[in-house]
Image 1 (cartoon, rainbow, N blue to C red):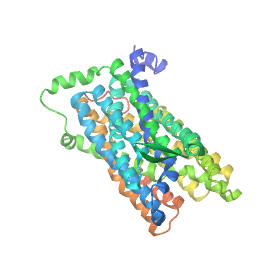
Image 2 (spheres, helix red, strand yellow):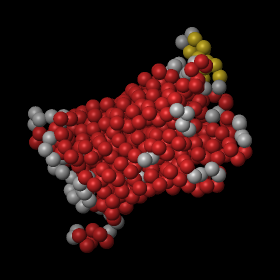
Image 3 (cartoon, rainbow, N blue to C red):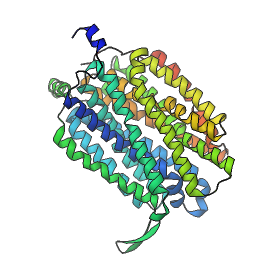
Image 4 (cartoon, helix red, strand yellow):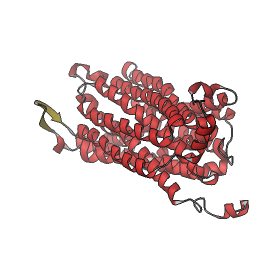
Length: 444
């Protein structure tokens, strides 16, 4: 098929059944991956007070941000470790390890009795969460052809919205449901069962996906050839800083750090704007009602975010990778400042939150598109995992700073989120040094 014929046919025209299967399996792993991360966001307003002694309740914003930071550090470590393992052992085997890890420790989070235990479990969950993305994004990139890569990776990353929807559903139907507030006898001891604990128990469900992975998937031909050619030369992190890869690694880390810092410090607090506007206009104090409004806000932000993730593919095919990142960074900055500094009514919040979600989340699909294109096959998962997840390490202190500003300086959550959105402007400057990879085949 010549170039003109290719342009005249849809990107999915020649995609095989097996390629679709890979995309579905990788996406499901990412769906549950995100659910394991977002179930804490959906239940933190119930879980953290329950895990904090009464005399330390004023410290809850600080403890919550420490828990977020633990999750980011764990994701960074897991992304690097499992990224290297994926390049050494293969995509299929390593993918199963990551899913087992995040499923098990999300389930065990239900048994936490102190806030620091929850922080520890979140660290362990994040080991698997960070690793899964690195492996799955490399797998999809290596299986799909060049002209379908941006679209397939955008769909892969956009599937994260389904994970957030599951967390929203759990937050609405389970976490906020008083029916689950009861006492059970467990191993001879009384154990208080609450909605947020049941939400974490659901974390064991993704482990069932492992059976499908083991039966259905095979190693990508690109990886098999690269592994054979490498011989005794094993993938390692220091190789990312050699020769021309140094610049690409630093660009990737910088983009991920900005995206993750603004996600955890700005994007996730968009859901609270609707609740605050509702409370100010009605004076509502019923916690169950306020929880439902909070989850509605989360749904609106997530829906917009999902559309933003899917849109990254066609946008970057038209504007290039750098142009798409520029569009989202500028848009994310503008949307954040408007939502957190200007919006006070329910109507305005309901209309603007999907746009806010679109612009503050959409660039995350770019990491799945862009990072695999920066590195050769023998280092693709190592490089992608390192960039995306070391970004978590750099984002973690920013979140600790946000908690400190709220706790020590008395800055509101909205103002702290608005301040962190200024990081989008730093992303614009970083793009000046980023290589353009549109239309290029994956590095061999």
